[in-house]
Length: 411
Image 1 (cartoon, helix red, strand yellow):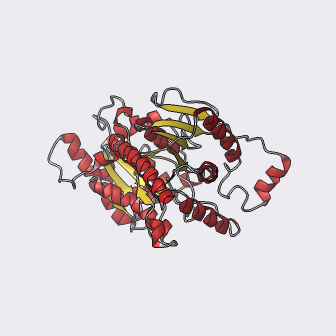
Image 2: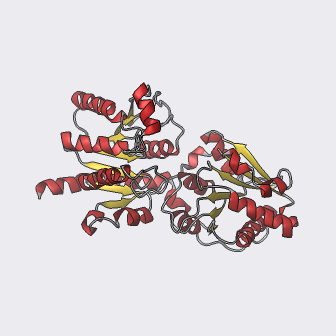
């Protein structure tokens, strides 16, 4: 079976989306023709069954476009700044089909959501079975920069994609609930789940945890917007004031981008030198090494009543098999951390409660180092997120998409 995969982000891009979708296509048993953006073709990250074509995005912007970017509130938000890539990618796909024939299936992967607009166009022209994969929600995403004028347009585009695609795929049940609450129940029957995945072969030969030195707690990822280290800083300051002995052999590292304004916290400045350190960004390969050599891996998200997001970083955390701690809202990440034996608390919880959780996890990490009895954790579900188990689900969904499309044609 041959599938045409449309994903603007693919290796060698370093975006999390590129890593996740590249991994999925690499482990698929299908014959894959992949079309992506960027400037370089990855020749090492895919197996022989993946044929990779790169269509660069013309990033040269004229005078009027530069004005529009600054002056028009909804410019670049319908659905995103990659919409200009769709025409060039469509021409590439046309040429591929002319030379090699129609594939059995087209699969589009958003973000960016412009990938799905290309899917709409291909569905209309070639009437191929179509699977649309969403790593994030579209019009309901609280982090998307949607203005008053662009919101209804994005809702309309989302509706067209959901109605025209034969199968739509999401990374969490919470996302499905959020997206489909505004649609008829019949449309929801198109929705299926496919989680992010980790690849156990990518961590190298690093030992599990830090064999010596301070207890190492790491957050790996970027901070931006309302996602800040503030709850962590406040909790560490609380422990330093009231139980300083619990931190005497601890180092907490923030690995990734962090705005300078977030490092101006007076409480951070009062912490002992070396306790909380901002390391800056590292390569993806190095981030996996840092995960594997940590005692505790920390997930932090913005406050919310409910979060539907499955951070791809969390899948890699799970594969590292370290202690998982989340300062996250109720929702997807909290559920997955709990299923994999970790613990979580809301970023809006009292600082003392967050501090107690961190203190207890540090004590448990010390006990693991000393090889003494550690209180039993819930049964872990790590393996369900391994790529060897996730890729076959994707292949099954591809086959199901073709079956559903054929059934529609018959009816």
